Length: 319
Image 1 (cartoon, rainbow, N blue to C red):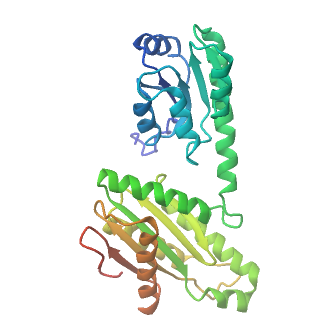
Image 2: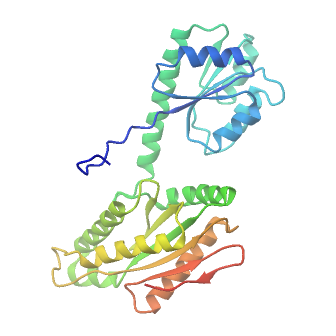
């Protein structure tokens, strides 16, 4: 933060371009010649190393050699093409193999482009930029398809996809993770007494307050009906509870133009862990849903937390 208290302007993340080649000379050459490109250039010297990096990072484009010992480029293409999470990544093959059958096989396995060695660096730059543009456009279209129309939050499909990724990451790294489910109290009476436009306004207003409270790394979704969900990586249960309490208070304090005499409250169930819990993704939602049920049964307008770990779930204090 600057001396006047203003937040610094965040520097946009550069897209990751992964070079996969067993030749140190190729890595040195591309590192030198692409240093002025606005990309984060990373390096792998084998197919297995490349796959490990790609499955753990948000890779925008891959520059892939075919003729590597062990797992070759064809196997890398096949592996990436079989998984939904990576099938969209543009892959530019850089190969000394010029036979037509190699090109046909590479394209058949999902390669976007094929450049033979020795390659012209100006041409490589142009093709890499084109691949990055395609990746950016595909990402934008994918994200728009996963936004829920009324609230602008992520939809249930995106929630399920990201939950699986984040649970796997938390277990692998033994890091904290929490999931929260929100339910607007007595929502049906808003629709019944003030009309569906008032109900829509309530959903939009609650979504706005949730989205403004969570961090950039958190995933806020419309779970269905009057329910919302927030996935919180690197967040232990006590911090998740504190965040949810702030959201609960902000929703309860808001004035609603369509019904100024009627406040809206929210009940919240949290499932959180200090480290690896060893639970399947849907079990996190089940525990959060059970905590939400207890919040409703306990009088609504409260947060109930279940802590999970290797020794099973434990009910924490409500707030």
